[in-house]
Image (cartoon, rainbow, N blue to C red):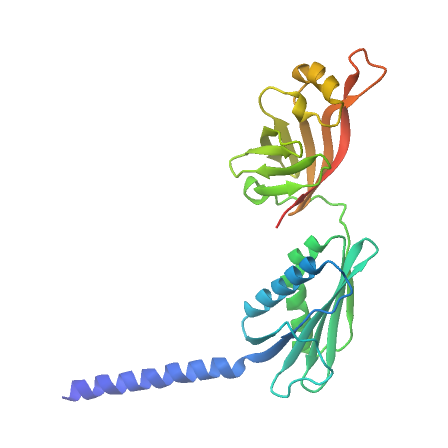
Length: 280
C-alpha cells in the first residue's frame, strides 16, 4: 500500500513539473501580429512568395507566437494584446530590390532594418538572418534604423555541390530550361523543343557543363537553320564554363557555333556571356 501511495505521489509531482514547464514556456512567448507587406511593385507573385517566406520563418523561431494578418494592412495602433506588430516593405529599386523589416512594440517603439539586394532571390536567401537580426535589435532595445547593403559580391560562392546545384535553371534567350541532376548529369531543353544531354562537373567554385552525344542543328538555334544543318554535325560539343555567384546564380561563358561571314563554312566557334538563375 505504501509503495502504491509513493508511486501516485511521484506521478503527481511529475505532472506538476510538466505543467509548470509548459506554462512557463507559453508565458515566455512573445505574441506577434504579422501584417501585409507594403509595396508599390506590380510583381505580385514575387511579393506574395517573399511575404509567405517571412511568415514561415517567423513561425519557425522559438519564443514567438505568430498571428496571421497577411490580409490586413498595418495600422498605427497596435493590438494591445500583442507584443510586436510586424510588417515588411518591399520595393523595386535601381534594378534591384529594397526590403525594410519593421517591428512595432506595444508601447509604440519602432525598430526597422533596411537592406538592398541585387535580385529578389537574395531576399529569400537572407530572410532568416535578417529577421533574426531585427528581433535581436528588438530584444536589446535598439531603436535606431539599421541600414545595410547586400550588394553583388565579387567573391565566388564556394559552397556549391552537385546536391545544391540540382534543380532547374534558366537565363538564356533560346533555352527554355536546364535541368541538373544530383548524379552529375542533366539536360538542356531548347525553346525549339530540342533536348540535349549534358554532363556536369564541379571544381571549387567552377562549374563545367558539356554536351553529351552527337550534335545536331537544333542545338544551335543561334544560327540560320539551313547553315546549322550543314555544319552542326561536325561542331565541337557545346560547353558552358560557369562560376557560382550564390546558391541560385551562376555566371560565365558558353562555347558554341555562331555565324561568321568571313569563314568558308559560314560559322565559327565563339564564347558568349551567359548567366543562369535557379528556379525556386
